[in-house]
Length: 425
Ligand code: AMP
Ligand code: GLY
Image 1 (cartoon, protein in one colour):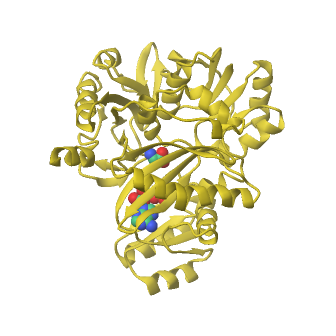
Image 2 (cartoon, rainbow, N blue to C red; image 1 turned 45 degrees about the horizontal axis):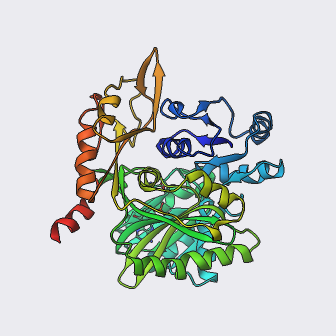
């Protein structure tokens, strides 16, 4: 099979690495890709926002499957446009990607199909939103409705913070994404990420992980896209997984079908595991980054076979096998991140890190005059496996220490919750 992978981050490098291991693969193309992905794929220059150009490339190169990594093209409807051109796609339709593209849409779906989540209100003007927030009080959560690159959520511990966040949304800080606001009840518990491969009808559980959103050790500092992850998440016990499938995922699949927009692709549920069981924080309609990296490290089966089955509505015939080992990924970011990262500094030592038995996925790199340089916020994902999260953590950091890049930084405590649990045992 010829496959075109869309995207350029660490998530896509991990997908490319796993797809390249498939005996079914003839040729892998990636657009735009990155220097790491170039180890597995031929990089092509394509404007992903030009769906007709992507379709023309697919026809010319006889692409059998397009795998869409990031959310923006999905929300923009690339799945629909490629399928209309007769091209097979792994990824949801525009209507189904509303699960990520509109927080209000997802909250209404939850209300209609009795899916456990935080109580909420939707507002399209500041006055009504303010009145609601003043009535409910803090702590409270304020969310821009649309895609805001992970920056549209404020967990406000005080009323002034909540009111500031509302003003920022309606002032246009998040562009059109903030024209509507969702105000939510504050939930407490432990967060976990749960993934399913979906084909419109069947949702096949596809692993658990925990991310580390804050930039600093001990979960302090501003939010990021994710500074590291590990899999599996111990809080996702078989009982919690069973409840998540029954109470959250399956009603979502039925609800989306009933609304005429069946969901196919990756359904990524951000969950809060509360005293009363799992509750939905939000959906994403793609793999998490860096959660995908740790899932790919543990997946025993052929990813291409699974993605094909999802694209063809055949997932009810499939099962998934994982290694018994844990996997852990450490993100190395460029100084300045999550603000403006410094670009252009030279990175050395990737081969030395790999010789420690780790995989190094490229997330934000470029080649400049023959040297590998930083070219983004999150730059490298150093990923390792081990019998325990603690062992995977040791191996990952041993590899991190072989990377020679003074301008990069990472958290030193990725996996701490799981390691603490293991040490208590
Ligand atoms: P989201 O982008 O919706 O995943 O939100 C980003 C982060 O905000 C989540 O990972 C949670 O840590 C936090 N968060 C979002 N919604 C809530 C909520 N209703 N209660 C508590 N924390 C929340
Ligand atoms: N790591 C969180 C996300 O991909 O949304």
